[in-house]
Image (cartoon, helix red, strand yellow):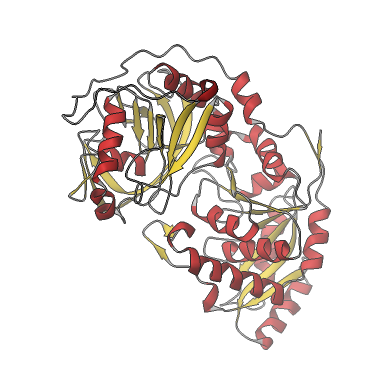
Length: 480
């Protein structure tokens, strides 16, 4: 199979240069021309893909060489870009920044090389003039395999400033494909973990994306950018397929009734059978809404391919789990922002506890861990785990190399996975009698909880790297 989707990688010398504004604006501007635009984000970030989805009407997808391995970057890209006229890939941090101590691994530069895609460098020109040429020359010449094929100048102060910048870049040999002036209306609000997700500010986010598109239309040469994208080299290989990935994954050992440490039965647990669903399907409820916005699209696709019916629910609004729920997935998000509202929804908290204490499989990552705790910043949560969670001043951030310590509904002990942590909360204690993961770096430790069917941890993982996780989880749904 040959992959020939026109594509661009939008990169920058550093964070804060305007990659998200330019990438999202380009996506929306090209989509308004009637093109089917496939949005992608380098790295583990969940928030930017929400803005990308708003700009294109398609699911934003991540390309993370650390979490998934370099061999999956092109297949995952082809899966997301199937049938599209153009793909726009937003980079992460600076062009050559990757996983700490791992060289180019997981950098925008590495992903651009794996995709054989031209790079457009977004430069914050607000405090420079002729020096911009030296900066661009350095980035363009650092790695000959990275094709820095154009520059978009951001935060330009005036017509005279633009003229000086263009004159300097004439000598660099890298063409200027856009020039954007400072514009407050394209700014998006941020807080302790970055931009505020789309789900929390839908109307304002729509306006912001519209403003980004208009700024890009006015300041960028869209025809030249599309021509550059069409010059991307062909890729060979098959697109990633969830069904094929699940079939080829090792068959899961039959789960046992109780995994890890036993938990006390809550007084409100009812004795009732779970309803069956047609054709042997099992409903897997996935938390969504404003408090739980972090998930990778491939997780739901893998669960579906493994035989689940995936149904989304909102813990802020829904008082019961979806009918027929046999398993529960609670990903990342900002429950700390919504702790009073989550606590006030007592019927759903009880329903989650009943499901978990009944032995059903529950996969909880980061925000999900907080929601399953006894309390979060003093607000009662589901009480599935006997831990207390609270906000802290310390940011915990980085990739992790992990191994499953305990048999769980997700993996057998000894399974290796890579993950990512990103939070300003702590839970006490940090690990249960049966921990979820052993983490090797930056310090050796165990973390998380395996309790009956519950697997709860701070670690965000990408199941495309281990499709057997979804297969095992759904199998547990059938037998619990």
